[in-house]
Length: 273
Image (cartoon, rainbow, N blue to C red):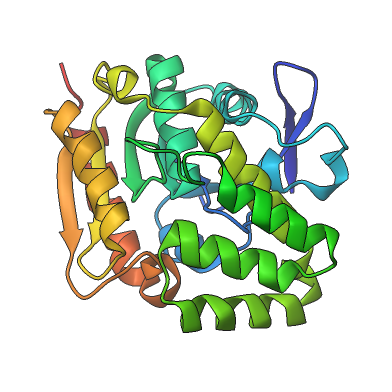
């Protein structure tokens, strides 16, 4: 694992594999940089792929001070891009997609292009409810020593899973120590997104070539969020993957990699004037 240094002096960790033009991957919730391993493995046959270990999911950095901000994660992305020394393609998924959008807005010259997969962006009401009730109930479950219940609350009331699927996700996560320890960080991630708030006016000013990616079987609210972003980014490309959902990166990594690779080839070989 390679490291560089963020603006505040924190070390930034990335998994580095492959050779060629650089794709920087910012994974979704519950990801320490390993969820995107299969997707990266497909892309690494033609690209140099950097998988970010997101600060929000760095257990060695967690303190009683609460969640890190999206702005801090953006600084980490920009530090990695600066270390590469040339504009990169950034791929962001779910909450990682929000980090990617914010990075594009903060430093356009750092990026040749971006693929953003169903960003968990606030486009209206807060993700955790008007009074943050999802966070309140999830944190209460964590205090009670029930991380599976906390995740089930998040999956049902924020992600939009049917109750039985949310319950099953909570049970399975609670049984795996590696994932169980990331549940508090997932609730921190949710809080950080709500603190960021609605940023459609900022995304409307992004001029970096961007592909907004989604699946036709994803939860309706994720489709709605992606549509809201697409409406304010008229020059972005919108692509819908048929028979795919929010987990397409795990279930069909070759399909997602093909979309990313084709976009990267087009951007790198035919850059905007």
